[in-house]
Image (cartoon, rainbow, N blue to C red; front, side, top):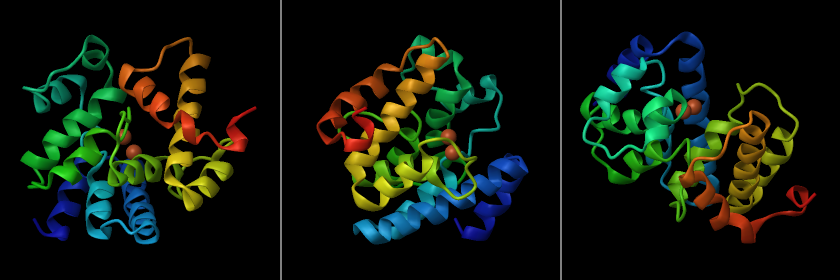
Length: 192
Ligand SMILES: [Fe+2]
Ligand SMILES: [Fe+2]
């Protein structure tokens, strides 16, 4: 599918804020891919489409993700489910067939153990894109993203742990597995 057609469809599927965010993630993922020797076009495409299901209702997401094995938490959380629904939507509505691009969309919210380089880039670009509202550790995370993807993944996952803990919730098992996976890469800034 041509880029123009994708843009047209995305604009209709997303609100203005989410659309601007996807362009930011697309650009950031492209730049990160360039500096880490990853495929720029795949990173940009995954960045552009990573939130293509974000503005759906829960019912629409469940319908889009039909056939996918979903745990009980996933089934009730739009925040988690939009990534799975997004993967299926990217394939069915936007004509994406590349399994690496689809994987980067699938894992952009929870992360997982053993992420590919492309998956890490999209996961991180989602958090650090220029339009993101500033938070305490964002500058440090942006720095880490320029330095080392694994260190940056550990930092981002640790932030995610703190964030859900502050809300009295627990991390999704996939995110916990990812956090354990990147523990060896903990940088100085996250060791406090
Ligand atoms: Fe998302
Ligand atoms: Fe996003």
